[in-house]
Length: 220
Image 1 (cartoon, rainbow, N blue to C red):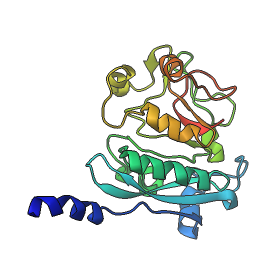
Image 2 (cartoon, rainbow, N blue to C red):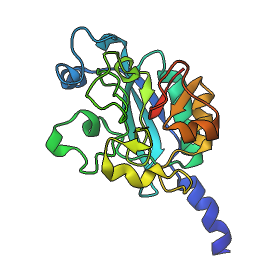
Image 3 (cartoon, rainbow, N blue to C red):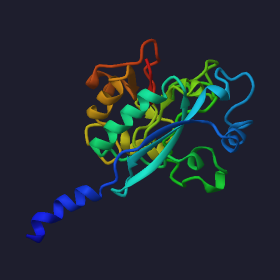
């Protein structure tokens, strides 16, 4: 009898999914200003929102994570993260302190899941360099990187960070790697996934007009 009742008890104890969307409070504005946002960025701070969601961590437990995103995409993204929670997809380091806090306090593995950052699009490892001269979708708060160590930026079969090379092989699924089910969740709101040519071919999607060397989800 004890074994029969144990499973329902555990299901009842599981924290429900929660999501909220709020304007940037002054401390967060101050945290972004100067380093991650500056005058001339394509989106004003007033159009950014903090999206707070429940997600699964790499430790197999529910966590509360936060992203700074464009106000336009916050509600649909909340729906996506609800789906990821149902899928029990693990997400690493999705806190504002991880993305925007002092460098000394950030995760040593740099496996930070984030969204907004006012910067240029990162050039392909094929060409090198530090910028492309065009805004990244992250600069609009309309792109999300999930577990960038496990899902690295790739071009010409290479990644800009050699420590992420083990994840160039997408044929062997490991914890934190984006799956077709995760891609489907983002596609339901009109977003596409970019990693490298092999994954594009496998899943049959590519952000409209985007370069092939991409990583992360972004609005199409």
